[in-house]
Length: 313
Image (cartoon, rainbow, N blue to C red; front, side, top):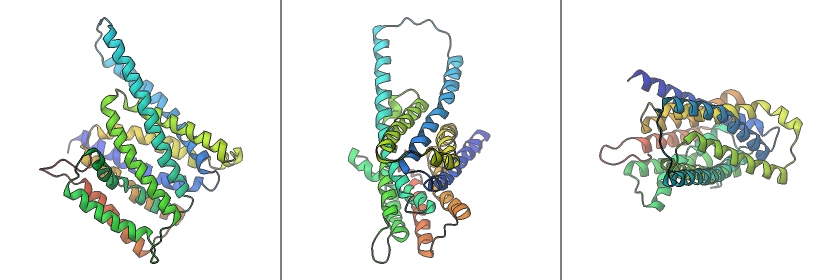
């Protein structure tokens, strides 16, 4: 393993630690503010953190480019305008889906634990190949084995003996569907845009605006509550949003997609670990077995296939 690849893997593992522990921050934040208010403040911070990152990236790209005198043509101007429209469109669509997924996750955390929310959310990795059927992408056998393991694990984790699912778990599960849709939409737009960090900034900004508007309509925004939830909001907004995304981008440049997805899926494990260490959340043996099966499902679905394309690119 090269030094660059080792550093990339370590950055991705650190990212999964940040994202996993963010479930605790989100859960604690619900003790002081309502979901829309929390997300509005969180994603506004995430967008602000990316502003200097975009400036640094733009500066580096400018220095690396050779100085050339190129005469602008109407075709070039038209292409630039088209790229801007595509970027705005991507930011609006991705931000809207992010708003739906994060809202459901935040509301679900009011009624469920950080550990369970982490594992249920991680199911988006298994939902992606199912959703891909709509665009005529056929998942491989390992994907379907993973789906079977994941469904069994979800049953043990969430479904009671009376065959009912807790409201919080169901809300987070529906949110996982939006995270899967978000991944597919990002995958669609990335080849069509020139700046991934700018797209992230736009989707954070859109999500923040939608959340704040919803908070003004449906919630009572309390300055005192925001002050009490300052640490969870700062952690989720700056570390989970701005820093986490930047580390993911840097880390993925030096490792392959399969290893990257496996390392990032560890956020579910860290979510349960930090939930136990910080919030003293304890799972039953049945729930722990469900977590093991769900994590196994994630691993199986990401294993490379020599003859067929990977489950998730």
